Length: 446
Image (cartoon, rainbow, N blue to C red; front, side, top):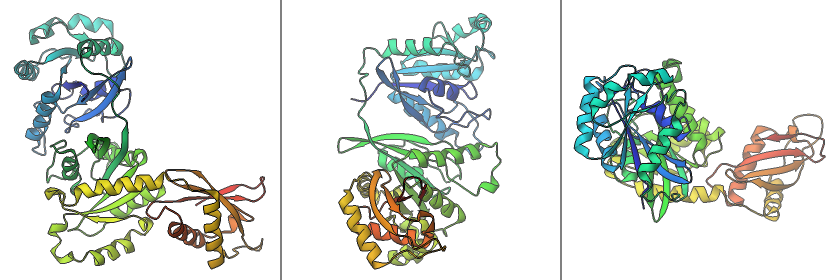
């Protein structure tokens, strides 16, 4: 059974995202004084007193979006209301009731939902003297909070729990896998996410930069729960202001790579591979994340209909992801989209596979008999004695060597590539740790 949904609704700049972050206990939504930062529905599962519900942040109702996405934002608000059992109607206690607050109140009365009126920015008890005007909204006594300072967070949470106590608030099904969808702007990431979710979960537009936050979208397949993370499209870092919304979106995209189990790196089939694509590929490689290179809009690439040639093109430019499988899709038509999830599950399983020490040492023997490491210094020829697996996700092998610092990068790459041939890690990154054969020697990482 689906969890109860509590939707946060209100006009722009009343502190909805701050309240969302305060109640969820995590900094999920971007908080910025610029109106209209939140466009999509941002959601998180919240646990309070062993009860669970889904909290949903929405864009500001009535925002005049400079990209002409107002209709899309309000469509997302309506979808949040359609799934909600309770609404947190947020107003700014310092500004009192505005005409736009009245419009939101009219909308909510039509929905016939349980509404908790939340008077935000009540940073001190004195501010509660200004609540009289808020009764005119028709939702009873307001709950005064300061989302920014955490004031009365517990009181509001208790009110929410009271309203959903009669519903199923058991712990939700454990998530099998987190999938981060990353790529340059307008590569089709949001279209792909909606296809996976089976609904218009995030806004799709040809306007570059439509997605600003990292949006976790929960969906189920074959009885298993997944999270797909839609991220903001990335462009060259030099073109972003260090305090801009775009910069925060960029850092959230990188953070999504770190917290995901498998990455979908989206390429636009009708555009050349760019420095942004290379940068993302390098980040994924540095984080040792399983990755599928997804070539989207393949139906439009009429001059690139040969998948083998395009694969060679990718291999030459994204060298750090030589292990990653490549998939050609058309997200707008749903072509090959579902098969990507099965492939991601295979990679996730690979990354969590454990092999025996005997298997590793057999592989080491085969590799070193084929090619031994050469000496970079006069300290002697490096020799790999034995190895063992010390971690999963990524598979991490600790190798004991007489001169660990004397193994050059070329041999490390060769060694990892051969390990993929000999061990069940053919399509995922492998981390190598080299340690001196004697305990007083330090280990090095590859």
